[in-house]
Image 1 (cartoon, rainbow, N blue to C red):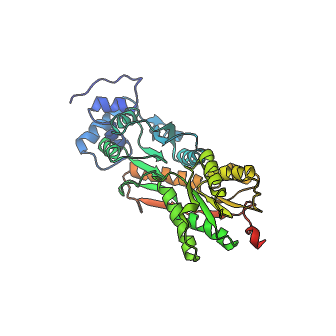
Image 2: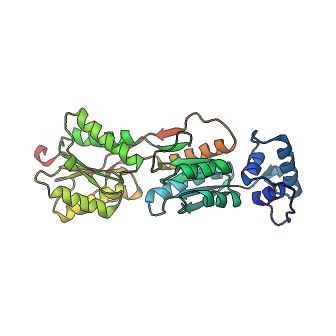
Image 3: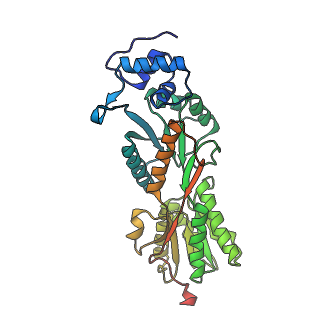
Length: 343
């Protein structure tokens, strides 16, 4: 394919790619010094980068391209997303990379999504709490778009790097805390069944009960979808049981707040009548009434780790691991206490 003219005003990766007759991903590889580009193509792209002044002058006269990555969420209503975005943008600023924030499009095949990213000149994608299908993954790979996942909803292909927290350990630690206080009727309000992090937290809850000699009761496991209202309704169902729980492990803080409200409406005091543990340690956890005992996720560091991993992929550097889990921590506040019979 022959060269096509590029005007001086269009000094983007897309413009250079069109002039060179190659993909945007190939131009990005040249810009970032990747070795998986043929010498002929590299020479052609480098010449066009110079001719069209794509490379801008940075501090001290050094040449540095304007670099951009996509940070995409399933939705922007989850309070965790703002904290994750803080970590990504912090690390990006340190690396001189711009971040474009958005939500995942409804594109099961991934072709239009991949074209949108490449046409915009993005170097890579961080995808947060979303499903990545095999066909989407194939489209991104074909387009040369590196992808890093944060808490993917579905089980990711082992070739796609993912960053998350120790959800199993967090669920186990939360349940062990309630067991240590003397509780034995411990319920769990879980999240969506297809969410990997939910499954890990559920297994941690069950493992802690089993290790303590308590047989998990399926009647004490209710679905709350990580949202306030479904968790509120699930808690009311638990309180209506003949032998209701004395404690609840909620799959996230939003669910825990729903349980607290349900307890209030049911005439139960927290923690005198009912202990509650959440998961996340969102900003509202320390200011709720009562302040919420919860499992803290290192959300800022998760975002920073995802950005660093993506930059290594863009640069063609090998990864030490394709799955990174950062440690959770139990934060004990005022929503947990011994059960009424032990007080």
